[in-house]
Image (cartoon, rainbow, N blue to C red; front, side, top):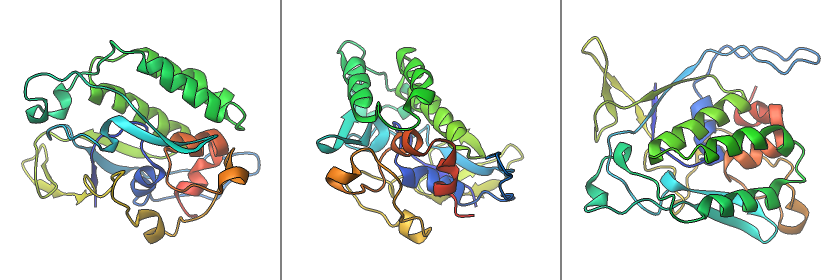
Length: 235
């Protein structure tokens, strides 16, 4: 069954783990080759809902020297922002939040095993300064999907549906598993537990704070690199 997600800014591990659940055709790894043959899972990103604050739509969680921290970016508050479709929400670039985010990410991950492999491309996406929230989030999501090795047929919703259904080009209706409000920074979920993915991986500050679960996928990527797929999908 296709899955339906809200848009998210560098989303948590559970977000991509849920995407990976429906992938099929995983092959065994070859010596010296981490590539995997995958049948893509179908994933919809909600593009027609109204903006909701205090969610992952413009924030993420990461592991810093002082423990788990959050990064969020501001939006342009126009009249009736909460009534605007998420696709019309504009990012507020008038404040120096981008420099603050980049400094925080560098400080947290500069000693991680794979930071130098991914930082330039990640920062290039941020520094391209897309006008709209959905455009930035989608660019980052495609980057994270590619670098973690997932196979995902990524689609935007064409209409807002309360029950998670979406119309197809042939006039039929596809029913999605609705995760739009399941993955939320203020509401714990059981996705990783249900997928039997509650397992630690190396984190820069784990000796100081212990392992911190379900942070932004960038935490997994910077620490595990091409082996991220093995964490996101049990094989």
